[in-house]
Length: 353
Image (cartoon, rainbow, N blue to C red; front, side):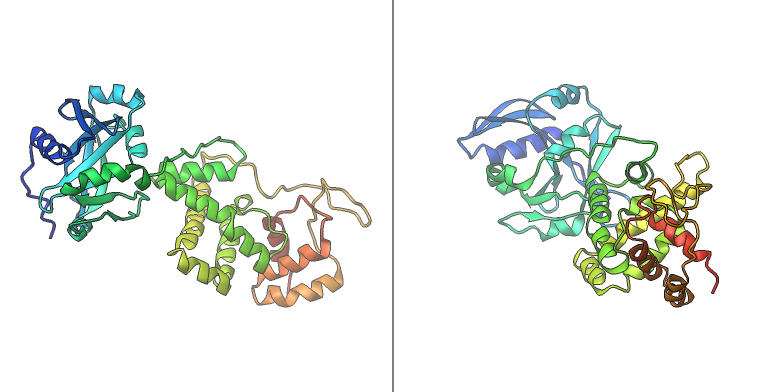
């Protein structure tokens, strides 16, 4: 049961007074004015502070999720443009605990909406010890720090060790870039945090790509060149046959499989969204390379070499298309640099048993 649904709210002036009472025990503290928000100085460094009661998030399926919300305030416009940090504290009156979110992130979200929510969990708040700090990572990528109110002086002593400055993940949108469109999909459709988006893109561009190159197909270049659902499902199926991927995924708490699943969702979104126009990955109507002809601009459309066909047919028959694609890629080496994995798989699917 969430006890925060019916808790009496503490008045803003009282929240300020309680904060002041503890921090005033330090000779490094100076109160500079305001109510909520208000301005302080600690060790000759200025901070804007805003404290709100923590309440239930009122999610029927997540009863223990709590939150503190930022309203729209005219004062926030000036604070957002100032050079001083903006520290947002959620106060849990039941446990006498503060929850603080990354002030680099919070400041950027000032006046973004009528009520911008920052989340916690009621059971996190009950876990806070009398001394020390508790740091938890939420599913949305936030990593709030929780601590007893009496430890506010120590918190300001260590504030820069808790939070890293977040560099916004720029989205240089390109009509021909699946990576850019994938980022937009995660941000606009899936509503994922900046950190989660960056983790998924780096996973697909990094460890997943290396594993595909090492275990599935050596000529693989980028998963962002593939948008066909069947091809992506084939890659996912084969990766889960690789112990190195399974171990990596388990250590990463399923982050790598989540990255794959989200990219497959993106590809499915493209397939069902007729308003999205993409440059086709497989270009039809290109000239077939003639025997002995070397041209980097041509693509192969049919495999005719009898020895190669005999080698790959058992793989095709057992539905191991990625293994067959690796054999074909090694056979032709650099003769067709324009060929993508999706191109090779399309040719292989046309081969009769």
